[in-house]
Every structure is written in C-alpha cells, then in structure tokens.
Length: 344
Image (cartoon, rainbow, N blue to C red; front, side, top):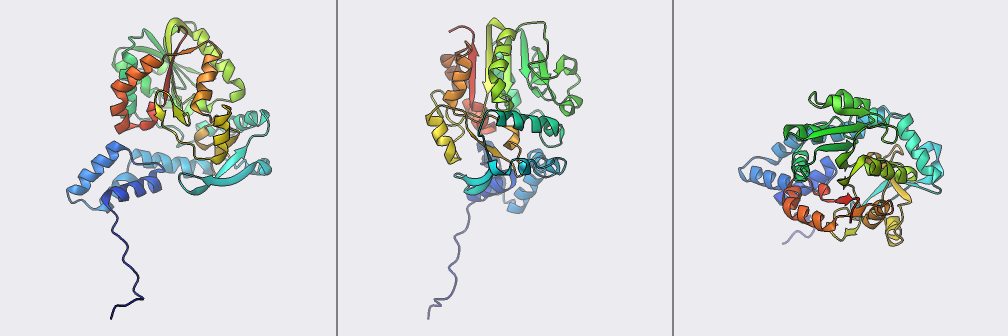
C-alpha cells in the first residue's frame, strides 16, 4: 500500500540552479557568464559542490563583500535614528526580500546624506573599494586606447587601476581621488599623477582629450551635479570625449536594460523623468554602496545634454559591437555607459 504520508522527494537541483543560488547568497548578485561557464566545467570534471563553495569564499570578491557588509559597518555609526520617519522597509521586487530605503522629501535631504557619508568617513573604511586590477579594467583601457588620447583624466580613480592599465599601454593619465585610504594603495608608477581632493576644488592646469567617470556620478550630490558637469566641461578639450559608466535604470535606446527597476516607487519617477526620490540604503541608513543618485537612463542623458554635451550614439553602438561580448563575460554592468562630446 502506498504511504500517502511520505513527503514527496524534492527535485534535484541542477548545477546551473546551484550556481545561481550560491552567487545570490554569497556574492549578492546574479552569476556572470564567465563564472557560470568556469564552474560548470569545474563541476563537469567531477569536482564537488563543496569545492565550488570554498573557491567562492576564498575569492577577493567575497572577501571584499564580507568586509563591506560587516567590518565596514562595525566602524560606522548608524544614521537611521536621526531621521526615523524617513526610513522604511519596502519589497525588492527582484530579490523578493525587504530592503531599507530613505524617502527624500526636499533637496536638502541629499545634502544631509552627503554630509553623513563625508563626516563619518564612509569612503575611508575597509571594503568600499576594489583595489585590484580586474579584467574589466583591462577591457576598458583597451576601449579608451581606440580614441588615441594624449591625456586621460580619471575622475574618482581610487588607487589608479585604470591609470595603471593605461600606463602599461603607454597612455598618459591623471586622476582625482577623495579617499586617502585609496591613495595609500596607489600603484607607484602613477601615484604622482593622482590629485587628492574633491573634484570641484582641485585645480588642474591642462585640458584633457578623454575624461573618464567610472562608477562616480551616482556617488555625487545631485544638488551639485550641474556644477560637476560644468567643471568637466572646463577640463575637456574641444575635440575630446567624456566616457561615463553609470548604473542607469530602465531601458536605454543604445545599451538596452542593464539595471532593471526593483523598487516600485522608482517606476513613477522614470515615467516623469525625474531623480529617484526613494534612496536604497543599507541597514545602517547609508545609501547602498554610497549611491546617492538613482535615476532612469533618460534622466542621466538629459543632465549632460542640458550642459551642452552631445551623446555620441553612433560611436557608442560601434563600441558595444566591439566590446559587449567581452563585457557580458566579465561585467555586464560595464555596458551601461555613455559617450559625450562638446560637438554634435
């Protein structure tokens, strides 16, 4: 007689499903194509899933994430209690879990967030920066080299990973960085070319024919974004290019959708083409990963075009055709970029 009380056996999880789960749990992201291909081949050679877990736990990405999620905040005070009525938990519609957000009620709230980040030394704590040269920096340095620049300016250059890659290609560069911790880890070949300070306050004597902003604009105070773009305009040569890698949400006419909307309130902001008024934060109240600005891709483009920059869509599409396959394998987020110039 069939035992009707016997619990049905759960279907065995495939290797692909296993990788998707552990990447989400351990690294907090989706598995990339390169990682998936590597570990599927690894498992195909009869290595155990435990070996895969140990490999990921020993990776620099996991160590950096652990430092960022744990040690980083042991050294930072919580700020949620200072504006408790503006913090709440909402559902992340993609991860299907509750997350903390900060509700912006007036522009000065962005000033407050920026002040807390600076005053509490957010960018001087372990786990914020990835200070090792990755494959994405190598690909980006190759991309930059196709413009044959005489001088490159890297905004928010950290310890100079891109500058070191450019140096190895014989391309001259300078950088601007606000973190003393990053500067202390700068590569010796390019350290003297890094200017310490805030972008708006650093005085630079020359013009640059290629200015680079990788994962920097989303960290800025939106109340001063116009000033930052105007400062860039004074530093860029007439025939130069501005390259911006930004986590822009929604569907873009050139690179498609790289960052899907995962907070419901953002949907209306995108429809109205406005800055997100709901800021995703960590458990301690700081903007997640230091990202003060969140916005749809059309909003970002408008900020630069309003200051006289022209998006080079045709050139962008050519770059995507040339580099998207590599970026798909290394870092899909790097595909969310814009190329601007002073001329149409």
